[in-house]
Image 1: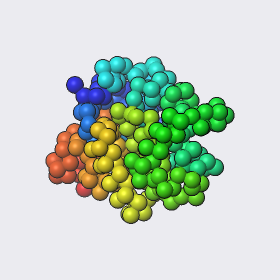
Image 2: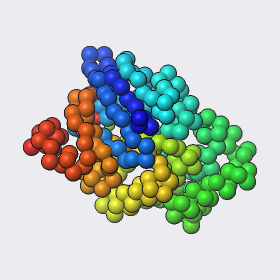
Image 3: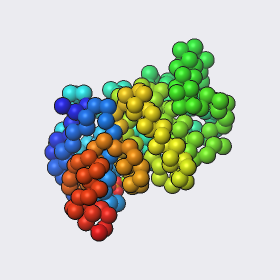
Length: 249
Ligand code: ADP
Ligand code: MG
């Protein structure tokens, strides 16, 4: 049994069958990539995992418990965190404040700036936030204004915000989109480190094959809302169906 078990998931938007009969098993501690052409249904599937969308059919079990019908913050509290395509950080706050607000959100169930300010000096939150920043090598930037950082550092900060919630499963939707090569490589290294040191399972949606092949243990190819093939990176690279559907060969 995987940490995440998806069975027969289908989702329709009006006349469009965005997902149909999606089966997926994500092994604990692994990095599982989902690739596929634009419009294949990758983001829709991720939205189902985090409770933003309820599928028409099928089941999604995390650690043996259904996530369907639960609110996003409840799923977050179960141990699933998500990294967005565009970093979702508070630009006006410092790096440290961003991480603290995230620690607080897990406890309180919501990102509430006002409530956060009243607990911002609680010792356990400060300590935890400092530890996480140290883990991602950002402690020296703790007082920097989040908005003034490079894209790579913003991504690193967002990762720190996710890690501060001690997730068991991290979902990443194109984490290196729009990044320069150097930032992409830093992100790959950071994700590898997080996966290994912290033993966090990851599901990553990614267009950049360099990133996918550097990180993934397993790859599922999604095409027109349904899994086409699932295999190791080595075997996916040479798969004729994948070349045809995804690489356009
Ligand atoms: P991907 O992330 O693989 O590029 P998406 O999951 O975003 O694909 O989209 C899958 C299909 O579903 C696309 O055709 C998209 O236009 C459609 N779609 C996604 N979200 C919605 C929505 N909220 N309402 C209607 N159609 C949607
Ligand atoms: Mg998408």
